[in-house]
Image (cartoon, rainbow, N blue to C red; front, side, top):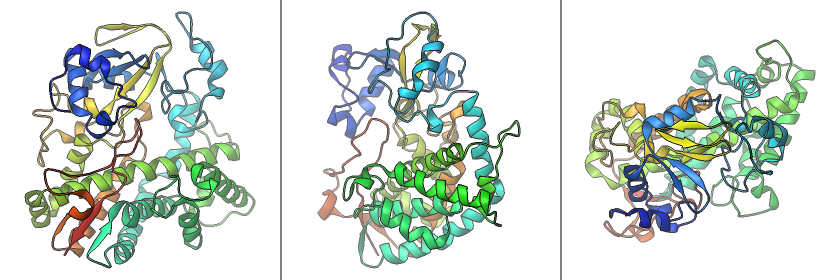
Length: 426
């Protein structure tokens, strides 16, 4: 969707359901931002924030915006009408009726502050270093399987199992249980939580809650010298011992969210490498370019399209007045291509000097706590893939020839990523 859209054209497009926008949202988002970076879309009464500065301002404003609908936005909507100039009380009273209300992304301070503190005790610099050492071993092991022939389906054969087992190791899941996690959480296509088998595949959180409840309960009763005991003994900032379910929710959220977003990053990065021989040659010749490549990939194809917020009081964003109870979408995909922040934003620039200013991981109190983990996973995966191959290209039998590629994207307005990536290699 690269043609110039008029305001009428913009209003005809439903960002949340239109398959054309699902596959190529950038023309639509640019047209909306060019008209106004804070603009209401008419289909679901969501204010789309497509400008970089405007999005960052809202991300950093926990006082006037609630994250209670961060994951769901207008679906299914707030359970009661939000009337009045301060809807904070209504949000507090009814938030437990919203989907994912116990998950970290939807919490507001002070509860979010407490749960985030628990998470910081899980993702320590020491633990990340140990986890990265595991990543190198795991990547080799996973590529032994994925690269056994001359072609592979990268998402299912490498991306999903790799990302899942990295987080399992980070959280201290015993290696003896890793195969059970793979059996229970990954479908035959290697995708977590997608349709493909028994009912459990539709509710991975149920399995994760059960497993981590058992782990945390056991470690509190029988402490050991392991990571899970560290999680079980973590305290809130004021010294209180959190209920088991609070620790379980934080661990399960990190597990599920980190899995999905990292796989989108990995598959997008590998697709870019396989599509562009010149880019691939540069990365093979100089591995020091890989961190910058990862940042530009995050900017260019943000794994999370955006987050939602709900205004608690009347607020002005980018000069636009929003009443209390307004649902806004902080559109990372659009903000990361805002020409006011990124020069020539629709061009992939391997050496873009400000690529790391992207907001693919959000900003503010809710910025992604797993960002260092995702960056390390991408660095390890790309390095090892280049180590193990001399050339990588797209499987044209599966995706079609250059200029007529057939890629399928996840049918969701939250995530941006391929459902499959078939590659060939030598």
